[in-house]
Length: 352
Image (cartoon, rainbow, N blue to C red; front, side, top):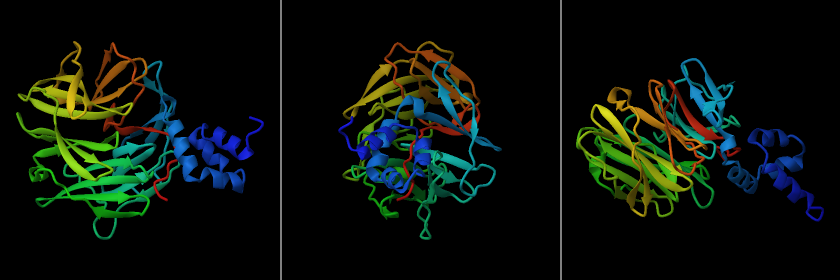
């Protein structure tokens, strides 16, 4: 260690400290500010921050927005810290659409504007433009956030407007939008199909596309972030006699899906994608059936191997799993009656 340059020692130490401490360290001197602002530092600090202890839960209700740590021993949340939105809003009308490496892609519901926001550093970037890019309509649009091989964070925005399906790509590096050709079936532009948010895994963004009636078509749309080409793959072979919902999650860079099926009572199976085919990992253990009126979101895995099923009304099912712990969380829309997301504290900036 004594033979290493002081620059290298500082770099190695500070890429391992919490994101908020990095922000404070920038004020030490000009040299540190320059070092901690480089792309290499941000990239390596981010890669070292993607651990369970840095995960936080962001919760939004009509009055407050708060961030809480996750207590793995008790599978609960720790004390909350109030967060002030750095952008104008009305009555906390902020929807969280996607997240990646500490960045949240959010929508301001009163203006339909898309933003990138880092709640740890409070920095944000508006993505809306005068030529109508960057405006999101709930139940019609879908959004996916990813980072490419050049470390450029991008937002893929799928829009359905008046019978036309458009796909637009925002680049943080060049701060602009451009069109992307959509080459799968045009019938997916119908409002009868429900698009999920995009899940980034292994160089591909994945969306579930589910038809909103019994026995409808269910597919997975894949967007290769390198070739910028779309393709379709099949849905897991689940019964089509009831309602179907697929929730995608990246677990240690492997794509998994929680497939919920049923009519009046729901069951849930866990599948993993191998190539273009789904392999069942787990059939739903014997738990109380979930009523369709309490349509659920799968909240997260925790390090002790428990699997939590959270309904929109806050009812909780805990399933003890006989599997190696995943140590992975991911965002959903609701947490015990709150809007929110799970994110990792990083210093990744929403703008260059």
